[in-house]
Image 1 (tube, rainbow, N blue to C red):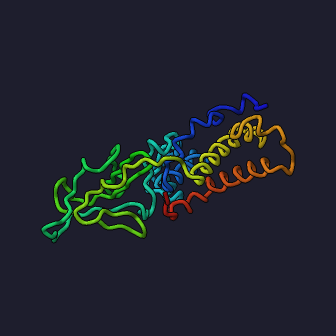
Image 2: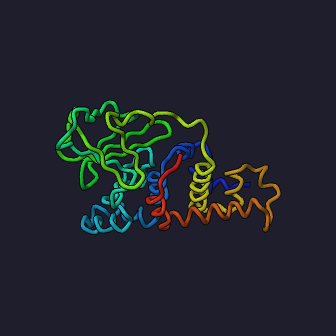
Length: 246
């Protein structure tokens, strides 16, 4: 039976459903914000502002972000600019059929923020998160050019960044389910739960009936706990360089 003192916030799986639709950048934040040393740096930020800047860079950020905010509300500014961020510049020599910047045509809930280097735009819609770096002098309606690193998606000519992004996924992928279980298992162990308590919380008490040392369920839970700890303690950086695939 699960110790009630270990339940806290991790036991109800429904609280983690938002994880199913996070991209790689948002997942990286979910792991980083759970690191005890990162949370300590956040608490110390006002006492030593200069050290706070250095601490942010040590974690791979331009600025420290509040670890109490999950990926739905947090907007961590990663260092350096990520491949998933599309950069938008005023087009100095636009063709006649050039693309115009249309802020309100971008789908989803939009959030503008300054990430310590420049103005950033984040737009979230079901199953998708679009990130843009906005160059100085950018105005709604002017001709723009897009730049992107690696496999980041930039709109085609004459196509505002709105087409094709607002389609909700019919069901979560196996990879997304693994991230959900990994984060839930990580929170459980940080709260002091045993491996068996983690198993009961993630898969139900009935699934843990045949719990024994070399059982498949125990091995599965152990891997989830190990994976969560590894991602929290620096492994999240690999998510920053991984292109998120639908």
